[in-house]
Length: 112
Length: 113
Image (tube, rainbow over all chains, first blue to last red; front, side, top):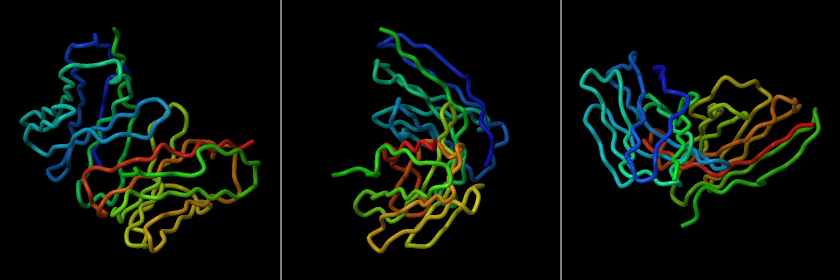
């Protein structure tokens, strides 16, 4: 699986958009970009995933650059409950047999 | 609907002992994966089971083993416990083996003393 690079920490004001970047310059053609988050003392929570196109769901939006070497997770209106560690993961989708390779992630702190 | 349930939530074991952790997936989910999360690190993949067969294994010693039952629940066994096995053990379930989104339980916190 390709390696990802994320900033170790970010801050965001409540109500503002949180934009979390991820670099994955060695991503291969069949690899998806996944985002999970982990709130303290809980298991990771799936947020969103994408291959080439931008994706949006009720939780967030995922913007993938045209060359697929980087992506941004956008939380449009961050709340205090969005404070968590956010993991960007690259993997081969349906062939990965449950193996998600987590890195260190980004600690997002949302301030009042 | 109940999510992924893990038991026990916490336990303390002595070095050299054996431990069994249990996981019940979401109803209808046939795939179960196990992860180890050491304090301050991201989760590390241990095993995946699908339809009672091992489909993936991470870089863990043979002291770690697992199985999946006909009802798709799963057990993770760790023998000859070391201090370094102290961690949060997470179980994740998905509908099929190659799903795109996994649902994690809250984990079992294992402390080895």
